[in-house]
Length: 409
Image 1 (tube, rainbow, N blue to C red):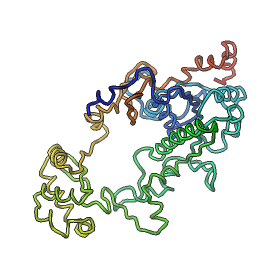
Image 2: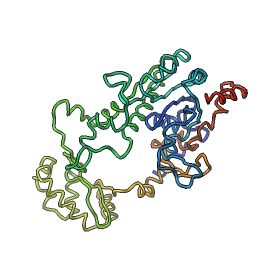
Image 3: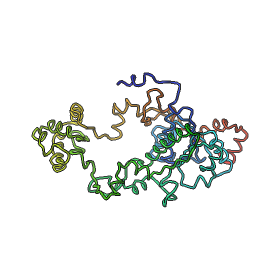
Image 4: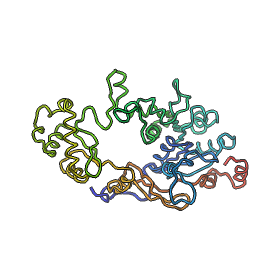
């Protein structure tokens, strides 16, 4: 299918499938902002509330090159498509404004330590009083309840506690964290899913609810059932780039780079063996099934490694594509940024930043044929939308001056 064919029935009058949904986001760092980012990308009107000093995500390096002032890559990536409002929630005036916004919102997203928003009188119960059908998403390290619920919780702690780190990394190495904010990303994604599910429930029943998402739970849920294996005492060895059941499957060095290549099905094995010039192994019953190849892991890997070493990456990828053998070049992120497949899918979108500079920002993952989504606006400067948002609440210019003087905004 051509790209134009996919979008042939697209509407141009909506920002996305969540057009008309209002989200009030009071978050910091990555997990909460990622939840809001997903909802904003899908077309919701997301108001990001920050302390007047700005949240930590604005200060995390590296900063975008070419900007006239420091713009964090983190902020530019995860806070696009949102409006910015500064508000000190520790003040009575700040809380009053927040609750006014809550009354006009469909969803609230916050990712502060459990109990913090209750202490500031903007927790679920307080927001529910002004908007009974509010959908309130709380994202935290370990959840709103449980023995560890009130601990400080960050991404690498969830990676460690979930069991993920114990299996990640080289076979002979020690526990290794993911190179990305993996648990933050997953918690943000599950927060958005929870909000959408709660929206559907409210549409049927009129009921709002509190959605509790933890980094730890999200990491465990996305661990491919490994928690079950652990509970049953089934050994799980660290495999590095290999798999227990897929042989051969590994990273292999070519003449000019590295590929990830393997055989998932027995039919893949027969084709790969012939491609590698090992017709004798293609039909050999000792290698025909996964259990058989498990006994000959070393020889299978050696066969694939020798063949790759004699070819360039392009040759290996082309041959494997033609023969329907799973294979991909191992890219750096810099190389991925120039990959035609990635670019055709709009996964990089040139976006105007708050200072007028331009930067390529990672685009939304899901594509919609009828209500396309895109980066509509770059991450806003701190408090850039204060006047507009407060005006929508009916707060006049004189009151805004007093709020500013009192450092509420």
